[in-house]
Length: 450
Image (cartoon, rainbow, N blue to C red; front, side, top):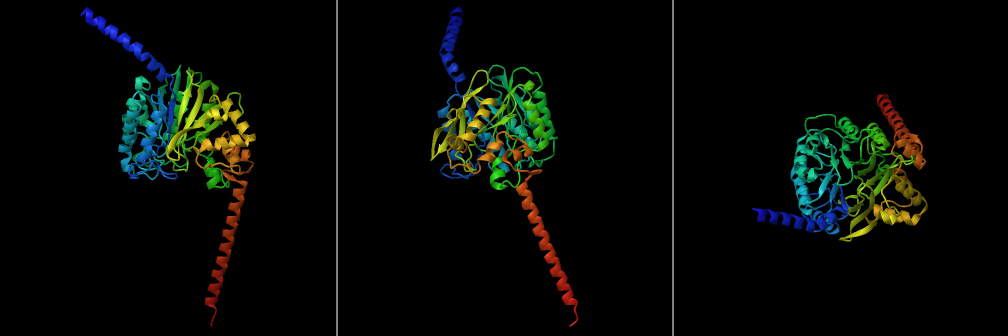
């Protein structure tokens, strides 16, 4: 027995000695940030999805292979929502979520996962997830073994099944991620997936307030799918600056923005997605301690962006030192650059404010940012539309945004929009007057004796 015990002890020491470099290497490895997969499981295409089409199986597995090559053993993998495709057959929601969880778990068997839900992630329709739903219970059961790796999120199942909320410890010095489903705050949200189990908007705000007490210990990252602020694409390209399109309802947006920007709550980073592009935002940009927001690019190329994901260098204190964009360009995955190529050497509010100033005066740097923004696909931003996108990085309210772009107005309408609406109403009123006069003339003519 003594010889056996000594042999076991020796084997344990040797295993620790051999595994120590591997663990150290894994701890220093980049993290993966992935979002907006939008997997379409019914596509039978033999080639990866082209621009303008959601992710098919070929592109999904190509992306997984590229992630593994770029980062074979990431300590943490962030998946920030919209797992399911646009126009999805929601009868396939459960098996598709199961497939995604299984494939990521097999690809990265040692990683801790941090997942958030997006607007497409429900069992019946876009922007319709109901609190306390069967879909939430199913998703919690699927992802719990990956999210609660090493006991990082012991309450995940209990809180996630209510409204997609949970808190997880990150493998850093006293840094936690607070994850929530902010789709409940969208103007497009409606509780349509079965019996309503509660007020998701109010509950998710309450969750956030409890998770971020004033004077709490340690740093917090807040993870959500939809960024608070202005939808620059819809405002610029769809509404043509006739109206300003916000992502979230003003009530919860303003309340949450105040909470996140309160220095006593120790939020050091916000991670979001939804726009499908590699971008940034800065909350309270004019304050002494602005808050950075990192927007993760999408795997799905449906918005004519090249499929992308990020490898992220995270310091032990929870500061992101760099984020590299890996994009699927001309049917080949390659690193197209990252924050360092923009002169950003840490994801902090002050660094992002300084980046914004440089972008204002440097056309070459703007071109570089535009390329990264769209994954090196033909750029969505150009010199004509630049101002609208630049204002969205720091202006989160409608009035603030209108002031930034130099357009006055009322409510969500700009002055130009009010003019167009007024002209349209006047034209409609004129048409009604003409129509009414014509009807009166016809009636009188018919009544006139022969």
